Length: 159
Image (cartoon, rainbow, N blue to C red; front, side, top):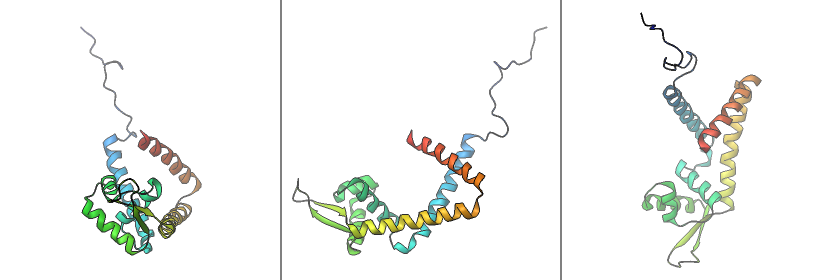
């Protein structure tokens, strides 16, 4: 009579019961990150910037001056939408426009000092809320767990 017992080499690998499936973790992580981002946005709402305006200001700060078309491509929006976003930023005097030195028919938009100060305020409000929440809602062990998770998530997004 042949031996019908499974060996570890023939048995399918099953994760331990406490090891959640990647698809379950993905759904939960996406949901909590989304809620965290919404909460961070509400903590910096007094800046009166829309998420699109904040994103464009941050891009201009990090990447430097750009044309409307280049910003539209980078932000995955239509040029018409980008023109509206830039018009709002210009009306708040957060960006400057100058002729493109390579093509005088175009203009380059850049973040100015008022825009940098506004971004710094938005970032400070988010940071302050998050630091206060971490201090008030979590003990040292929990903060260490969150710090370890941040390292892992950083590795995930850097791939």
